[in-house]
Structure formats: structure tokens, C-alpha cells
Image (cartoon, rainbow over all chains, first blue to last red; front, top):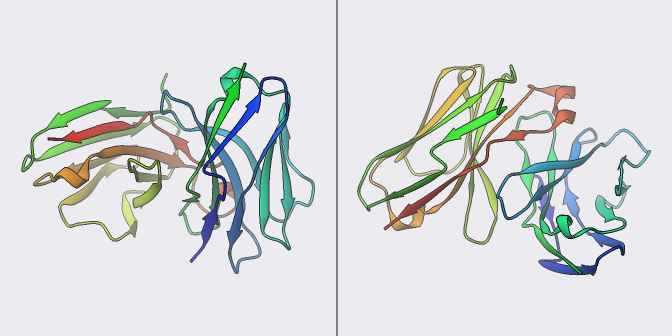
Length: 113
Length: 116
């Protein structure tokens, strides 16, 4: 079974600085998909960024980028120029072709003014 | 228009009661899911339906029964509610299988269930 591990339960960053959230996963599949979701206090799950395993180029969405290391099974999220609105829980997630998305335990990020 | 809508958003009920949570998606997706988020924020899949057929049924008590009248709806009925059922329940949908998984899941806003 696939597992997703987020080793940082909590992190904080100063406004305008950069922070990196870690995620590792375990799978025997060669083709799969990775995601980062954001859950602010409103509770809504918001897709931040996604990556296809067969693409070597790291995905980027505005201030959000990933460092995808397939051999190491690592998928970290970098948030540049952190904003107060980035304060949220961040979940790393994995899915393959089996219609089953697995989530890490989450990292609670606090952006400090 | 809300893509995935769940009702109710909040539900407070007594132990032993039976309750339902409804979910509807207007995205034309083929697959729908129920996830449970516990007090520690851990998200765990409960059920998955593809075109009205059950495809994932994780280890969930029999008191939980999903119903999918059509591919746009997936409701969750819970019998004999227990204190441990208190959680946030999320409905989600996705495009389908294979390469469509790149689009990820679209989530509803969640239903906070409190059993007293």
C-alpha cells in the first residue's frame, strides 16, 4: 500500500520569506500523481500544485513550486514570498490509477507578520 | 455555482441517532468519494464510487452506508451514531481513472459532525 509521510507537524515563517515543506512517499508504481492541498481555517481543501511522476520538470504555480525527486521518493513544497493568507494546514497527497488518493498527516504552517 | 456541495455544513446530534449527509457535484465527474478527517486533521478515505458502483470500501463500521443514486450524487448514511463518529466528513469527486488523475480531486466544504 502507498504511504505518504510528512515529518513536520508544524512550521512557521516570517512574512515575505521562503519556507519548504517536506513530503516523502512509498510506492512500487512507476506512474502516479502527487499533489499539495491547502486547508485554511475555513476547512476548504484547496489544490495548490500537482506533479505527474513521469515528468521530470518540477511544477510551478506562481509563488508555489515543488522539488520532485523520484528516485528518493520525495516531493517538497516551496512557498516563496510567504503571505499571511498562506497560513493553513498543508497536505501532501498521492494517487495512481486506482482511484484512491492517500494523504500525509499534514503540516500546520503559520506565517508571522 | 458550487462544484461539490455538501449538506449540512454542521450537524449536532445525540448518540444512537441516524443521520445522513448529502453530496452533489456538477462537474460531470465519474468518481466520488467520502473522506473522514479526525480531530488530528488526518484524512482517511472511506468509500469511492465510480459511475454509481462501489469501488473502494475501506475498513469502516457497517453503520456507515453510502448511497449513489446517480453519478452526480453520493450520500452517506450513518446509523446508531457514536461519540467516536465526531469528525469532519468530506465529499470529493474526480474526473475518473488513469491519466485523468492528474486533475486531482475537487472537495466539498466538509460537514462537521458532532455526536453528544
